[in-house]
Image 1 (cartoon, helix red, strand yellow):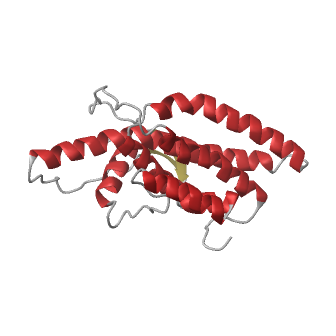
Image 2: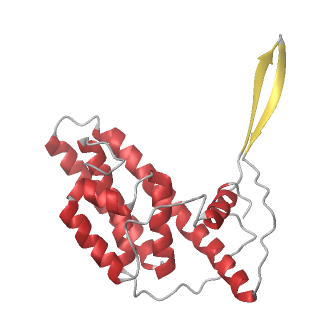
Image 3: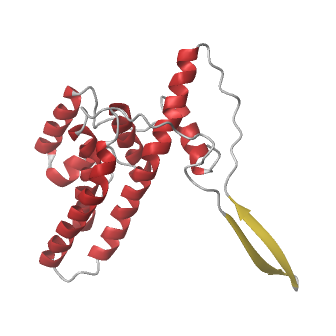
Length: 218
């Protein structure tokens, strides 16, 4: 469809169906109470990985070590305690929802690959029903714990992982009418499925936090 970055193939449409489960669930539980658990900022969300190997160079065996990227940014300067608190909340929210966004994208890719192996539409539809049921059972309890701001951040981070906005995903799978409906539904709660992720602009600080969380530095 015009305006979407997704291919027009059926398998990508099925990927969209799964991703919609993640996109829409936060708005189903906007009235949920905020989480009260404290974030352990000394415990990284993603554990740094170190790979050790050996290569042959001019007849000699050389050991090498491959590590995560290490990011060095200028210190964040806060003009008030309120700004500092907002930054700490951002770190907490990223650490909470980034794993979900990455898991969602992985499910999309794995499901798309498996659908390619199925013989016909009936088999693909039956498999999709099983997958969607499993996704809802596995993730609904986690999604119910998200706060309003975490739900909005999750939509942006899914865009970061999939390179498509929530509106584009709905439009690709359900069409422009449904996309308009869900956009209006989100807008009623002060959100928008058309929001994109801008790592060089408005989401610059979020991207900095995301990179450091991915590297195990936060």
